[in-house]
Image (tube, rainbow, N blue to C red; front, side, top):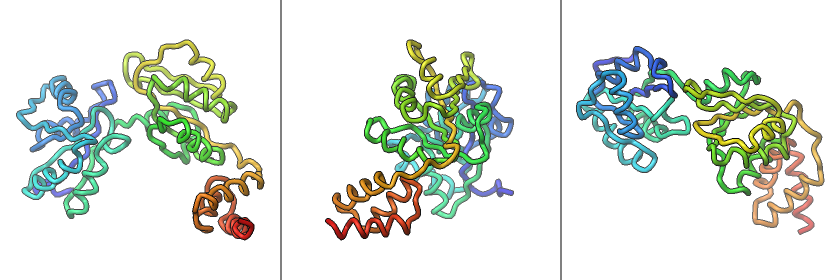
Length: 283
């Protein structure tokens, strides 16, 4: 049990949309903390006002651009015995939101980090998707560049775990067009505006959902839950060979090229390394 007489950093989860999801413990911490570091002070003031909590000059911005700088201030305050709360605009800090670096800095300083758990968009989406959740991987936001996204999709070809990721409404149709070309038969669920007035779940195969999105105006916060590969597809040795040759010509070491191909195509490191050696001898 955390010693409340000593300084500490408390990671507090806040509602995704429905204010009723704020836990009693989170409410008490927001009311009594010495300082609350938040992603956007204007947004957090709305949360405080809705719960009749006075900020009393306790709100401080901590976002991706000042997280390292603010970590110094957080550590100094905790060292003086203060209880510091960290929140994001919605959900749990550090999950595709600022927070990871300040937590790491406070822990490295040997100070206490604890949590008041609660809402998380990705966990909420997984719970209602109707897709296997025994094993899953969180991918955050997909890359903006088409080439980088293609590389990510290639990694998913052999991924057996369920895949969760965030996407912006502006890019959703494009993303699903790309997904349909590669994973058309996989089950998927789009969770939009979870816990909010216009909450929507769109389920089906990727191809079916891609068709449903055509011509629609998409708004709000979105989590996508994509089923993993049902079974590992047969390995195309020619593709492995081409991949290894490309990496070796680009300057990779034999080991690095082999590790890359093994991870990408699901072959053993040993077989990839032996093939890489054979290819290098011909270059």
